[in-house]
Length: 384
Image 1 (cartoon, rainbow, N blue to C red):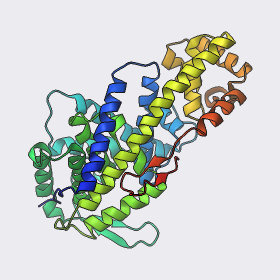
Image 2 (spheres, rainbow, N blue to C red; image 1 turned 120 degrees about the horizontal axis):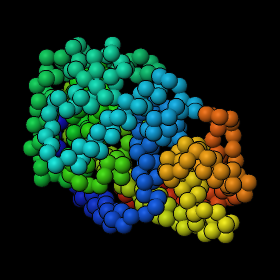
Image 3 (cartoon, rainbow, N blue to C red; image 1 turned 180 degrees about the horizontal axis):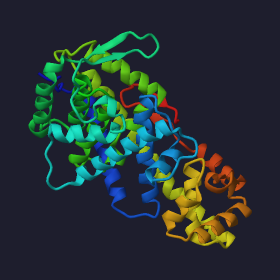
């Protein structure tokens, strides 16, 4: 027996309707190709990877994660964390491919394979194999056991029940609700020795991707969950609904409501970023044209705007340039005050110069706080 899908109340249906409206608007806006689309997708994927891994204590900057995604050595992230990020990125990339695969079927082998992609570098943790023993989650500060997974003997049967449900269960339920319940059941079965939380969040993203909600990088709530205040709420609601041991008999509405709220808030944030991307790109094109620079440097400036640093190799790859061309462009941007170089050789990067810092400050004042969809008083949540 799995944790059951709850009946939605009027407030939940209203929030779900607003999420669907934002999803349709997003799909309409993404149907038109823009120069900044590729960079925006990459940044969203990096932030999702950052969010899901930070929950587990593996912290890295968005800039370093983008370097890992492109096969480069990160500037600051430790090797042990880099391996975690690379494993998760590999699994999430496969989730993106599976979302568009014409022939697809959930099975335990698929989930085991995703787990192996994530933690295959931990050979001592039986990656890709259902756990051979008991599973306990402890409070990192007190050492107290806060959750005990089902007995080892139950795990194969529960996993079989879960994949059967993923293929055919509650198909009339909204996709956001099914994805939330997939997440809850997998994290509570806790079928592997490690990677259960990250696997559950990735599975939620896969369910949404298979249901064609939007592409995974635009539908994931992993970035939102990685924020400190959201992470605390995430653990609280998992404890409230799932209790201290496997007990699939209670009401799961609080969990689904938590996920719907996260989707609503993340959708607001993505919509803001999409709007801002177009405004920033247009402004930078105008400034670059006035400076007499090649318009291809806009992609470098956009990267510096949305992140805190840019590496030459990133710009070179984005624009298909030679090393010399990319280096000359960045020297020109530095000379005109757009970027500021730091470091030498492989450690060299470019941060916002005085002109970019001024533009970033102006746009920061325009960012609107997010609206809590469940608040009757329309409580505003300040941007990160």
